[in-house]
Amino acid sequence: MFVKSVEAPPRGPRPQLPPELAARVRPVASAASRLLPLPPELASLFPDRALRRGSATVVSGLRGGGVTTLALSLLGAASGAGHWSAAVGIADPGVVSIAELGIDLRRFAMVPCPRGEWAEAAAVLLDGLDAVVVRPFGRAALTPARHLVTRARDRNAALVVVVDHQRHWPEVPDVALQVLSSTWEGIGCGHGYLCERRAEVEVAGRRHRGAPERHRLCIPAAMTPSADRDGGG
Image (cartoon, rainbow, N blue to C red; front, side, top):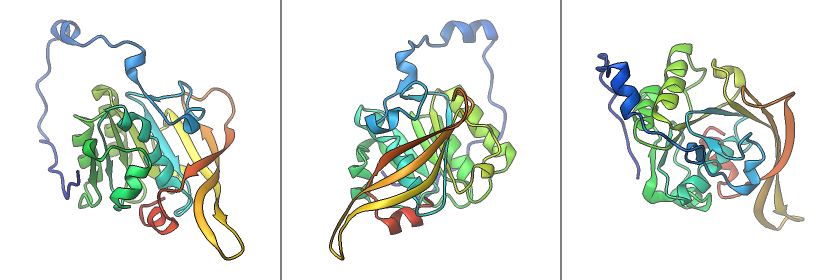
């Protein structure tokens, strides 16, 4: 599902339930229901080996280095399991590329050009979806970043942010993935096809225990180098 624009939510304050009533109607979720599945090759990057609802993950790295592909790949297993997701501010890499990452197009929305209102568009989608990938236009300001982190936590949704540099996101994420380097494999001496991309990823963040760790992994080759670069990764 592709969306050209999303109307910003009303700016007026929303009515609040009395604390006693809110506590009674708040759903009780099991530990397993608070986790969204990840592809096996990416599960080791996360403390729970899954994408936790209400959390914020930042994926950073130079354009064309596989950042966009890595961020969208985080949605593949959850989408295949029936969860709804979306991408905001990422140029359309093509439906075939998205599907090859494991994302079910029947439960996926794209807002490639939110007319500068990337934070408002992501906030609207976090209200009703399980996971949202968003790429801010340049360095994100503190207020919209904090608003999205709070919205994801309140709506029990997973937020994935794509930026060129970690310092472009002012909030400390639960998990920070930085693509340090990547190389394509599959081309021989002037012949062959791109089959996979080997990447070195550094893992840190609020929920990561200890010093940052470096992992070597394969990023799916569903998106071509030009599509990944155009998509902001």
